[in-house]
Each structure stands twice: as structure tokens, then as C-alpha cells.
Length: 398
Image (cartoon, rainbow, N blue to C red; front, side, top):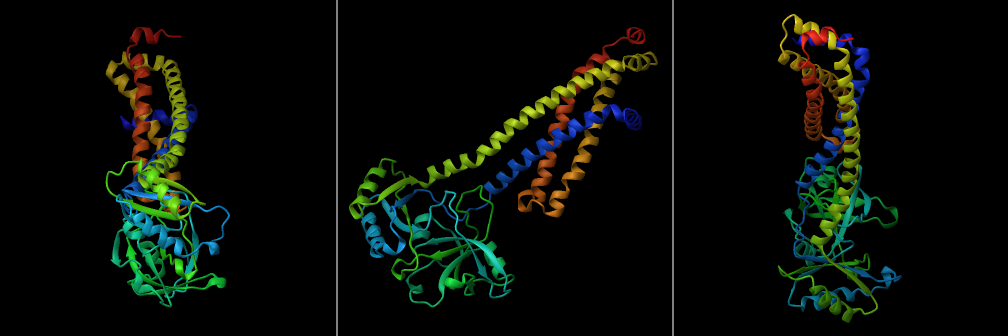
């Protein structure tokens, strides 16, 4: 049966070329959407390195004031003032807030390999780990024991540790920045599984978490991370803003719970996928209508052939199965060609981790299932119509 179907498909290769091209395009579209969605699902399930529940972010809008003009003592005053509120459990400072699109990138040099490693930086204070719920898997967080040390303390995620110190424990190791104007040496004091400040849909990247030291005059933080009691209502924002105004009335404050920021950022990430999915759905629908029309036309052209088969003993079920099987075989041929082309992407690493083998295999399986289902649905009625023809009517068809 299969050999007979292959012969029929080959004899109609010129007629089936456009049909195969339509199926190939539909397969590529569905594959792209499936890969996009599966990569997001894969990222969503990976750890982001911090909790963030019951934590609020306060962005201090200081106007045109320069960093060097901010009194260092203001951070201690802000922290003590906020801790006086009964709802507040911990207060930390950071260069920017999690669940925003903010980034700070630089390059560090490995003391082991000498290679320059591009990385993200998250500068934060001694209390930020508690305020944000950062989960360490080794070593410790910054503390007063790091005061006055020649090498500045740093916490790495595992990806950065593997890049700087391959095959070695990073704890206690040192590395340097590559900025010639402000050459700095860092000492690794802690290790986290990962850190993705932009939330669960951010692609993993090397991260260095450095210490914010307000009294050294080397850096400034403009975000306060406030850990509050569980169940604190959103109305607490008024009391929090009032307390901040008591410290610096000339500044304005943008306050939001991290969980609300997380939800907003997830929606922002998903909008492109939703838009592309809607467009792809219309394109696949157009392919389905075209596929249905071509199958109907082909079936009409083959009425004499169908009548001959019925006359020599083929049953209606045999005709039905033949029409459906031919379409599924044609779809299989188009998808095999598509897979041969698409498999080059993970083989060459052209899309990096975005299209790893897990995503490729899952997307291929989903898209093949979708195209087989589409082909089956489009061939059911033409196959049924062909099977209902009587031999006499078919043989007298002109």
C-alpha cells in the first residue's frame, strides 16, 4: 500500500509541488511559534535567584542631582526611618529594581584564564539579600567583615563562576575589572544558583552582585527594597511615601510591590508572542483553506480513476483511506524537508540557547502533530465525497 501511494505521489509531483510548499510554510510557522512558547516555558521553570514576595520597590527620583552630591548618611537615615514602621521587616538598597528592563553590563577579567567575560552587574547593600530573598548556595552575603578590605566582595551566579574559574571553586578567588580608568579587584564571598533581575522570562546570563557602600563615595543606589509583613495592603503605600517625605521632601518616590511589577513585566514579555501567534493563526488558516480547495479539486480530477478502482472491487472505505493516506504522506514529505532545514539551527548554534535541543525536539513534535491534524481535517470531506461516488457515476463522468 505504501509503495503504491509513493508511486502515485511521485507521478503527481509537479501538481503536488505548490501543495507541498504550502504545507512546508505552515510547518515552519507553527514550529516558530511552538519554539518561542516552549523556550518561555523552559525559562519560566528555571530559578531566578530571589523570592521577592512581600517586597516593595521604591524608586527615588532625585531630579538632576549628581551622585557625588547625595549625602552618604541619607541611606542610614532612610533605613532607620523605614524600620520604625510596624509593617516593615527589612530595608535594602540597590542600583536598580528587579522586574524592570534595567541592565548594567561590564567586562571582568578571569585571573585563571585571562579571558574577558562580559557580564551583568547588580549593585546592592548589606541588607538586600534579606529584603529581596536572595538564595545563596555557597559562601555568604556582604557584611561589615568586608569593611576596609583591599578587594571588594562579590557574589557570583554559577554561570559567571564557571566562566571566571572553570573547574574550580570560586569562593575566595579574585578577579579584576577591565576598566582602565577605575581598575578594581573583587573577591568572591558567595555563590547563587542564578540571578535574573528581569524575571522568569529573562535568558540566563553571567551575573556579578557587588556591594553598595554609601560611605566610600564609590557608588550610589537609587532604589529602596522594602520587605513588609505578609498581607500588607496596597494602601500602605501612602504611609510609606509619607515617611520617605519626612526624610527628603525634595525627592519624589515611585512605589510598587515587586509582585505587581512581576505581573506587568510578564505581560510585556508575552505581548510579542501573542501578537505573532494571532498573525500565524491567520496564516495557517489561509493555508488550511487553500489545502482544502486543492484537495477538493484534485479529487474531482480523479473521479474516473476512483470509478475504475470501485469497478474492480475497491470499497468505499478503501477509497476514503487512500485519499487521507495520500495527504498524510504528502505532509510527511514536506515536513521531512522542513526538519532537514530547521535542524541546522541547533547544530550550528545559530540561535544560541534560545533554540536548544529540548526546545527543538518539543517544537518539532508539536508542529508535526498540528500539521498532521490540519491535513487530516482538510482531507476528511474530500475523501468522504470521493468514497460516496458510485462506480457507474464515476466511469461516466466527463
